Image 1 (cartoon, rainbow, N blue to C red):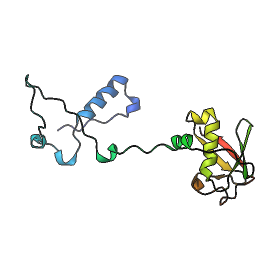
Image 2: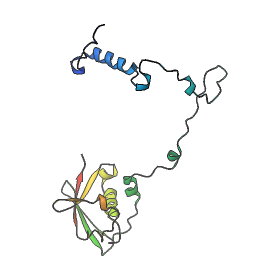
Image 3: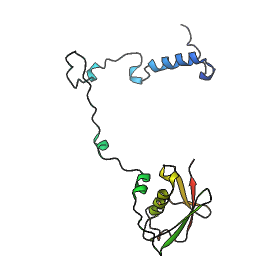
Image 4: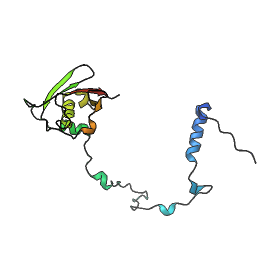
Length: 171
C-alpha cells in the first residue's frame, strides 16, 4: 500500500488547491459513529404535510419556540431613551459629565433617582449616544470606576452629588 500523501499547509497552496481542499473537507463525514459506513437515516424523516396536487412537498411555516414568542426585552439603549426624567429639580444632586471633546454636561437630579437616570439624561441629550454609539461612564479618580455595576443604586447611595463623571466612547 502507498503511504498517505503529506498534507501541505493551507497558506502554501494556490487558491484553486485551497478551494479543492475545502470542498473535499466539507463532503467528508467526520463523526465517530459513521467511520467507514453510511447510515440509512430515512427512519428519522417525518412527513408533516401531505404533498400538493403536483406531488411536490408543501412548504410549511416554522413554529417559533415558546421563549421566542414572548416579547423581546428592550435593549438598555431603548430603556434609557424611553425613561422619563421629569423636570430638573432646583435643589438636588449636581452631576457633571465630561465628554471626550471637552464639553461639560451638568444637571441636577433627585438624590433618590438611580444612576440609570444619569445614563438616561446623557443618552437623551447626545445625538451620538441616541444613534447607538457605545460609551462608558466613569467616576473620576484613580483608578476610574465604571458606574454600570451600580446602575440600579440611587445617586445618594453612590454618593454622586457633586461628582465629576468622565465619558469615554467605546471603540
